[in-house]
Image 1 (spheres, one colour):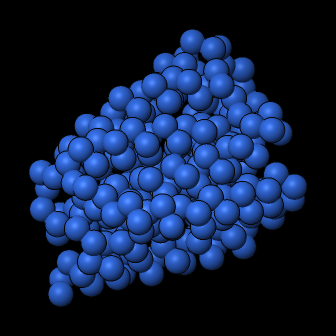
Image 2 (image 1 turned 60 degrees about the horizontal axis):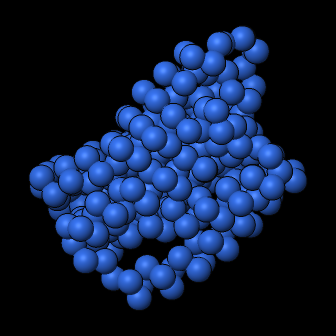
Image 3 (image 1 turned 30 degrees about the vertical axis):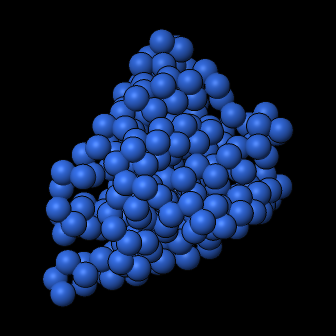
Length: 232
């Protein structure tokens, strides 16, 4: 519903459930990708995805996600949790206090849009691979405020991009640590179903204020639990 694949929930949840870091991140990326595929199917049918903006994001994020994934193995668990908590806190603040609205339409030629989306994709891809969060929570406002993309188009395009950044990072992670396929595939069924439900609600009619606030509060709870884990 809000242009995310779910990684902001999966990754901290798996860490709190004592999953090894690489296992938590790889599982989060896979499930994030599945939810994104599900949502993108609906958005594609409604012709809401902007491929001209999406392709540079896909290429750059897919190239940088494996680098982020390999970096995960080189930071200790407490530092990883601290970085994850910081990113989730930023996402929570965005959800609670910054509503994504249509900005004043300003014509931007296609070349700056392609370059801008490529740079955004590199940053998002690295963070996605490192933390397992997909990056949609940051892609949407960047597309809306910097590249002046309509909000719903940005959310739909973000979901399409998250598919590639998530699976690119996932492939890198499973080359490092073997995933629990039984757990991942079973959970993926529900992730796909949730993506279908959320995207259909967003396409048909969505008053997102309440959804964003609830999601923001949930993220804040995760931040507190992660910080507790660091200092316990």
